Image (tube, rainbow, N blue to C red; front, side):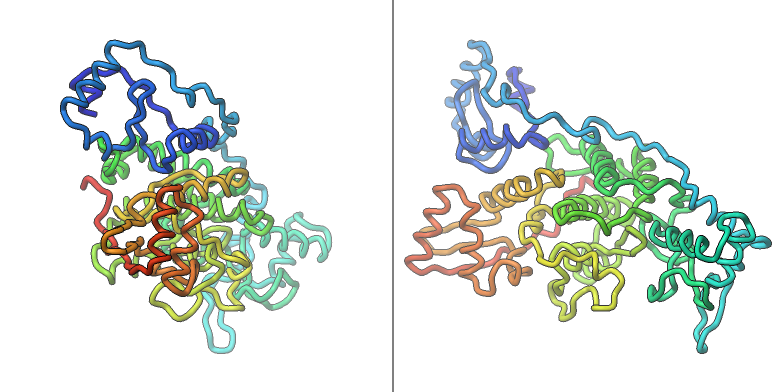
Length: 460
């Protein structure tokens, strides 16, 4: 920034956030996986540290090179990436009123509805529930169905669209003395349900499209409140931004989306984006956890209601994306076998998600966008960038490999031994770093794990 501002150097900036082809070319051209990478005309300098390492004479020479020669358009400006999807061009949320919600509103009316109230069964009280048998009769009497069969079909359609559910998730909609509860009557502290007036009344959106809109808004907020050096975020500024109010309205639509028909890649991309959005949302409205106990509560309590289910940050990471594995310092998996959220979990966890999930701390990976079509390349790119940076530090003299603490906390995802963890990382390293790691492994080396920097990436 000093060079661009004080010295008045003309410059072009290439955004690689949605440019896989440009990113691939940059790696081939520079052999570097991290950004930024700096060029003075056709002269490749390296990253910020490489630039800072230049002497004043070298910098002056580079400045004169740019000032006295017409700036040449780097080859990666010419490379054309695929056209951005509609949600990347701009996302406008249009609420299409849901006819099922209209029926639900009538069902909930105190005098003429299905009789929502507290009911007792086997000495246990269930709050704000209605009886399936009475609801079947109500649907017929109010003209929504002609027969019991039609009423049952309609009720089950409402359940599939997360209008209501059986109180213990054990039954479909039946013409029996079973208790059901409307979604909004489930008391939860999820961040997309607790604010007054936020109720999902629209036709459920396609999950990928909704997550795309949310991530676009989050990144717009991030960009608008990012410090000049790009390293810190003004979260108080985000909280007061009118766009954040729009974001919260959009997040409410997660409540009734359908997760059942998503592909594996679609599910991974969706939940990475939602996790990263939830972390930022929680940091904005709740603040940063500063102690170990606060961090435990943060990751186990901050949640969204998604597709009818309350999912915390740990539920998303370890329950879904890691294939229902125990989180660090825990013996049990997040979901039991009879947990209604268990079917959402991946059958096989994806280790690369650890280099895509953002926690708001300085040691976390940077926030990026992920989509179903390009997921494999995007995850590989994020893993390469992270491991070729400070997440793996080599000391050839001390014969030591220092790894990010993430790979220690989640070692079961990478390999049970230190050597296997390092071997897992090998395929993501650039040629020079890979060769150095292989040399260290062959001669015998010590593997250590870095202290984690939990300091927030905040200007507050």
